[in-house]
Length: 518
Image (tube, rainbow, N blue to C red):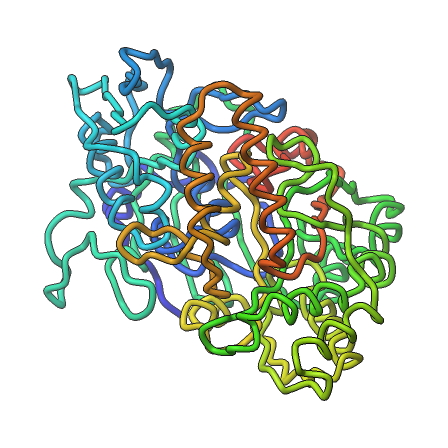
């Protein structure tokens, strides 16, 4: 086990418990833990959950879809390209350093170097520190999603991450695989700092005594995160009292968990789409639209929702869920086995072929079972699937390396905007810009890309929605990927967590700093 020696531990009196007799510990079991302590190493729901524990964004999403001030207390549009953010006074990093505008400038530049984040910030020029508590965020073109993007900006401690580590590597290096300073050290402004971590076993977060949000109702002094990927084991740990909070609650256990006398269940409709991508570079068969379409027709996504998800999901025929600007109500789910067989025959693959497939087994709800079901469905059109599943901690490296012909990917548009799906999952992969960073199918349609770029520059909501809906129709007609469903959210905690529902949201970023335990 590895004890993290963070800068704030040098000031243990500053960061320690106010009093052990009154300490409130939250024992939490999730299906996986963060892959790193570096918030910029991966754009994923798990890493954003971690960021909300140990860091703070400039603004964050409220339950009603509005923006809540966090490290920025207010903002204003200075000109069509410039948004001025006024920063909060008296904020300290876990190291004891004072938070200033230069940390925002530094963080934004680092985001633009991250392989996962840089495309999100492609339209952002250098930020400008007007003074210590004022920063101008400038875009190269008029851009209507600046506030949504500010929810991704979790200022890092620029002084803490500057210089080199003991190996001579820059402390600000963003390293997906292999050692780095930021992998095992953090200094954010969030309600909790990391005091112990053993990857895949346990992470301990301790309340930061100098946390700026003194008005928060939160009274949790310590969070002990234990990853439990096995669904039955995770539920049993909650019902027995071994842990206090779990997520997700598997669909088959919703009724049992919800009826337990000591437990409260919280569910919400979800917006995370679950899909499979078909790698056209690895397999020339997938460059044939008829083959991709056959895969779409062969997969009974309604059956998966009914049998595997126990109805706790919504069948998807596109990326954008209802309520998003790009949701196209004309698009209907496909399932027609005879049509799938006819398409395979027409394409010259009546006898089928063999493909490799990978999926995680602890990232999405019932992900392994869903992958197994899809493999069985494809067998009916003579496609033999060699399926390999693995924990999330190993999965993303394999996904990035595109080791398989067919790969599972789920995506929630954390900007709450349809364009985000296209930017990461369907735009032509481009390592320089970061577009298509999670497009392991290597699908590429320049016409679709141009439409998304134009939509992002369109300020008229109706015109922009029409463009995004057109993009969904283009992807649908081209069978760009295999649709499955939108995954619902589920959490459960002990009944002494008085405001549990209040700290949860459709984005699945629990605000644990605000949790109150009796």
